Amino acid sequence: MNSVKLIGNVGREISVKEFDGGKMLTFSLATDEGYVNKDKEEVKSTAWHTVVVWRELAQRCETFLTTGKMVSIEGRLTYRQYVDKDNRTVKRMEVTAHKVEEIQKKQAAAV
Image (cartoon, rainbow, N blue to C red; front, side, top):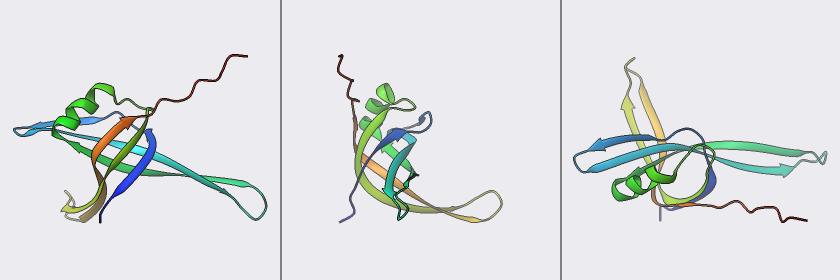
């Protein structure tokens, strides 16, 4: 089964392309993870993912996705390749999302 779920922050402004069959929306998603090494130091890293959304979901996402917004996505990994302008073969891995939800950050309670 090809299934992926990620929670992260939208990294750059979304890109929207329109086709006869609807819209395609792409954005980058930053996910963070961390661990404590043997010296008891916290080590953090950020991974960047390209997310592609199609048709009606792309139309809905266009209304609420902005840079920095935390979202949860569900979809599948898609691999594609193409030849660039310098005649080099480029391979890309993307997440084709079928579900995108905004995650509301918790507000600190007033003391």
